[in-house]
Image (cartoon, rainbow, N blue to C red; front, top):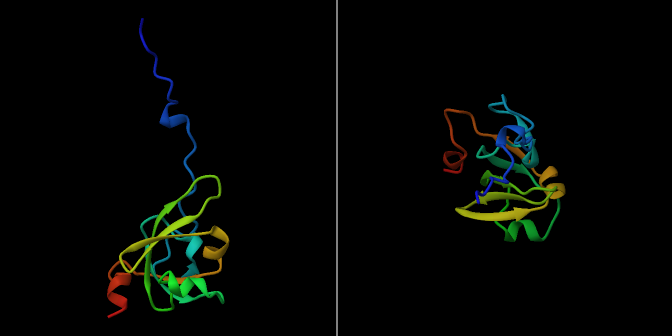
Length: 109
């Protein structure tokens, strides 16, 4: 008896949208619209008591690590740790993308 592969071929699966802004090296966008693994620094936050405790403050560098499926949260790295935030909140956080020659980590120095 042979076992058939029941996993659908990856070519037939539609990839999740990874980013909304691809060719923008120094523009200000929402955190939600970053491409995966893009680095940026926070320029503006919505008024919230929780965000500063998560390490999200203006001037901090962030990187989009993952987008959870089914409209789940975004995982961002800030200060070397990963934090999950809702897409709604991420849509209200403004960031400036790091240019190719300048990483967001170097912008805090």
